[in-house]
Image 1 (tube, rainbow, N blue to C red):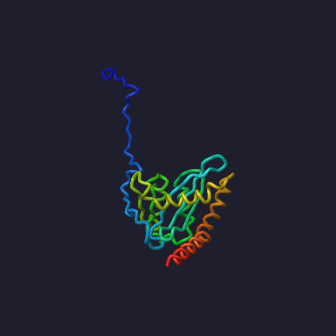
Image 2: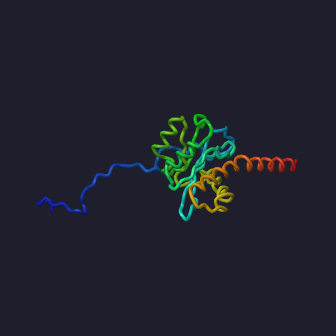
Length: 194
């Protein structure tokens, strides 16, 4: 074939540029599961979960402050994308320049150009869980367990608008009423044990 200048369609050499995979990014897990005793906005953790809306999967993204486990940002949307994470970041009602570190798993919705640029703009250091280790993002995982138990498993969403509206209500309830109730419960239990 070579002598006659023939080239097989099956063996045509193709140039494939090297592309690093998200999970191989050199960003380290500097948090090292130190979830407690953090200052306010020192570390914000995030993750996504799926929610059924009118028979289809939609997604919820939450930002949680390790300081007090308050949900400081949230979003809902039809796709698991960087735009959904960016929307949650945009919903944070604190000074974004005050957030020191942002910790997530290694999903492409968190580690991409859009989120990289947003974090750089506000001087937020990125932290990533070790590859394949959900324990490194345990607070976010635990938060979604609570959200599913208290909110999504008990609801039937017929539209994304309904999910977004009810998510806003839930976050408000979680951050105010639930926190206040749990705080009183802890004080009462502590007081009764003395």
